[in-house]
Image (cartoon, rainbow, N blue to C red; front, side, top):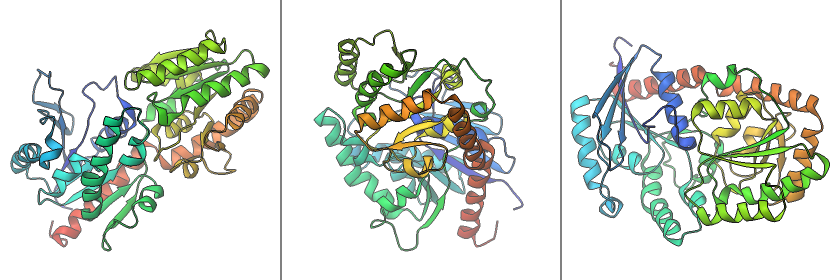
Length: 393
């Protein structure tokens, strides 16, 4: 190609790179970081700001421009995102990109597909499968509406899709266009996870993620109380945002108190990037007992950090961890005994922790390293633009 291709990336980009909120933001931030290190893209990020934002509307970085847009009205989804579409169309008219890359199958993909510009979407989560586990019926209704109207529209109309897991295409197989081009590219993991120094490894079990009902942290605490019978020196660190589901969080705190394990369980809250690096460095393993996941960033991060994973056979998790792969241990959803047995087995076998951790790290190097994922994504951009212009670029 004789010139840079213009790419607009559309999605929820972190306002503060030191504090990333959730796996989708992390995936977006790491991919942008990797793409910005290439020299054949004119790269722009369009992202919405909070309603109380009072900063610049544009930030220039090396090989990257971030455009900070005003948030759209509260009930915009009921108007087919007309206000948001207008804002995006005006910005696209200024930038004149060759391609849009929309993160997730929500409003960003919806307006991108209706812009008239070639678009590729990445589906990070499955809205109804994620949303039906919320405690609030209002949130469940909102997620169902988003799934029924927005997500299904974007999946049906997408001509190009990046799937972070085969689970995505299996789930949506009846909605996909016959002529859709699907590219399988997992989420990128920042190189710092691969390069950290080993920490204290004081028999710490780590849960990392938002504390939500679908994450089944209650199950984890129940199982951990059984672990302490054989490994009394073990500790459980719960790292993640705890404000979305306060009633659920309170039920977990109550369980901790009732089982008399307050000294062994720590609620760390939402952590900075530096703090989460340290947690991965210090832990013996990551445990993720969820009832629904697509391709969790924390599993890839744990593998990159050389830590074994204990997780449930849901969504795309089984393909990441692998049955009998040597990267971790899979258990059935809701199996308290299964979780407890897996955690106890690893805590009592430091040699197995090390072996599984190194096997997972090698797998992560091959599949999740930021440079590899960015290069694969860059190649996809060029394939799509070449196809759209029939080689005349």
